[in-house]
Length: 89
Image 1 (cartoon, rainbow, N blue to C red):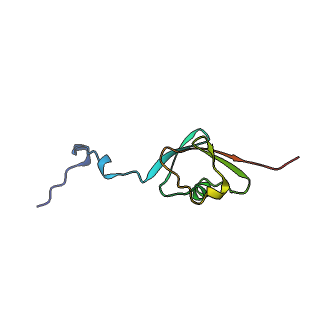
Image 2 (image 1 turned 90 degrees about the vertical axis):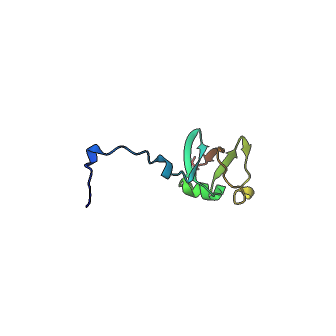
Image 3 (image 1 turned 90 degrees about the horizontal axis):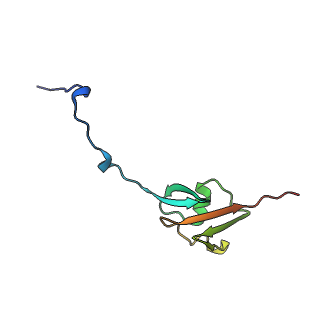
């Protein structure tokens, strides 16, 4: 015998315990963002769709030299200011 309970008579279930957050929170130019874990700074720029050509980056109030972008892993709570320079006259 199979018993089916109509959906309007079922008890609500809290399923939040089975969902997990695989991202982390950082701040980019004053805006909170959620990004995937495991990104370095080069991958972060790619993730947000910014070309890394003419860019300056400040991480946690320190200028981050371009030579350190690949080795610098983004950490939860990091704060970035990213400036993209444009040419013109």
